[in-house]
Image (cartoon, rainbow, N blue to C red; front, top):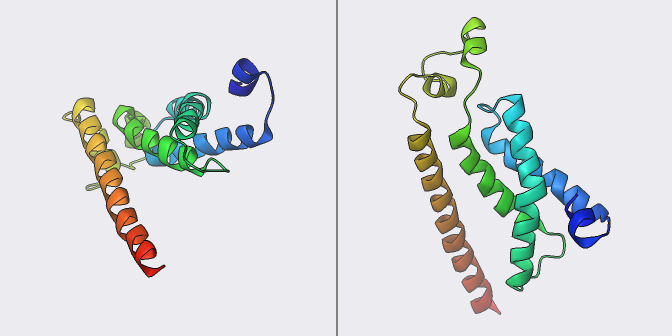
Length: 148
């Protein structure tokens, strides 16, 4: 849709990367998202987040011929943040007796569960992922540069 609407062309690469972006984004919330939330997260990642992050990578002159960074970094981080907005069907889980002590669903179905607190936790997780990736990549690339 993005290619047809904004670039007037149809690209198989963009279609595949858009579909892959939706799959990457939903993996973060797969155990707590309802089917409709999963569809919304996947469509948003494929139709909005991937094209925006791809345009950002092009603007930053990052050499990524298969758009792996927008798919995995951009849509993956979006998926991690989406966990804060998800809440499972607690009534159905209670009927199936799936909510046990210590399970993820127990926390998400609790009356004390706060979307704001969960979103803050997810944002902290995104920050941790970002600094860890930058730190380890810098160290590895410095070793590569020194070894040449």
